[in-house]
Length: 342
Image (tube, rainbow, N blue to C red):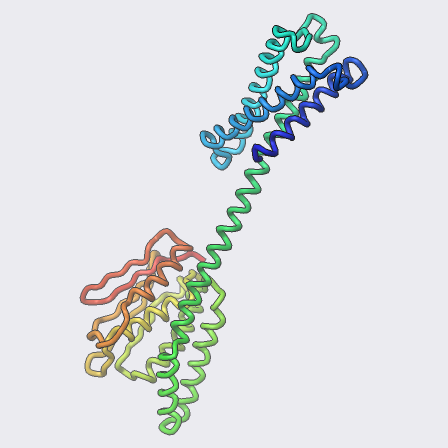
């Protein structure tokens, strides 16, 4: 609650206290002119207590945050606010009597008969209880709002990364190579050309199906990779060997979509593909990770860095696990993807 809201709120609450207690004692409301000192004294207490309680809660929010322990924070806030208000009322009441601003004997012998002090204590406690509830509700609302904003930002970032992966699969270069392959197959082997088109359609269908999906099962990813592997087999024949050796026990685990396809595509893109020195890509899994390993057959003269696709994969993985995607670039090129539970 802001300072500007606290000021009128505490003045209103203070005046309501005054009206209730004065009416309970004299069965009439205080006159603004005749009881001006009483009004002034009430407003001073209201403003002082309002800012004092604000400072107490601000200090507590730093020393004992709500998110650390709601019960402890609520109890501490209620106790300190009530203690501060009680001490302030006693102190200012004594000063007012000494300076003759008001004439009131605090805690007299007939206190339990007229019960004004008891009513004041009960009202003060209830007010502090309500204010502490308001503080908690403000915290809860802020946490919910911040949480929703973070969630939306996270989802937006994931979709942006997903879009980058999708653009990679729909690149003009990839489409051009696919169309060239189809063109050469149409007259040479129409049956193979038909299968190539079907697998190409299935590949793009998977790409479009997962464009707004953050994770898919490894089973779905493998099925899509098989379609993509068929396209590679038609284009490069025995020059590219793709082996998928993932046990079915891992099929229900999750993976960001197009991850395996991006890594296989990277392996093809960043190596010289030839029948004399075939590119061998092996994909296997353990309980902890998925491993994509390929040999090095030489670097093409014009090719982009591995880092673009790998950075995309790393960023997408960071939303689901604190474990990092590992890269080993020695005699072989190896990528280790942390296993994500479904």
